[in-house]
Image (cartoon, rainbow, N blue to C red; front, top):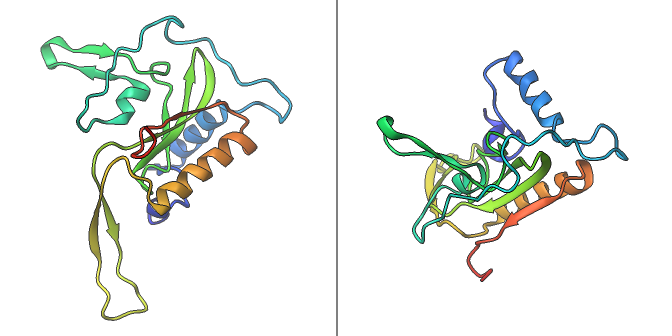
Length: 180
């Protein structure tokens, strides 16, 4: 859990069984060999379905745009589809550089890398410097839709993983400030 917040660890699990499950799920997005075709699976959603989630002009959870969301109250819940196949999005590096959301998803059964911006404010916990007795932990609020040094590095790391290591097509939902 210590390494999750500094970008070393991609995900945190509770036990070995869950860890093996995460690895198998991750590998399901990657071609079997460097020269193999993509690891395409039968789509879980109709390929020609509409994307029903519509982002607001206010802050919203970008994961709903990617993966969809269940909307409504307990009595009348409705699935609102996102851009990618239902249940296929797996976020990685979620505890680090939280102004950017990265992960893997499927579109029509085709594995893809996904990068988007967090539109909401996030709080960054800055630990005390152990070498400085006068140092203390503090919290910094980071604005949404802004590329900070850590989130720019996270974006570059994800692009490198998707392109060089995993050979996945990448979708960048660029709604950063200054990208209009």
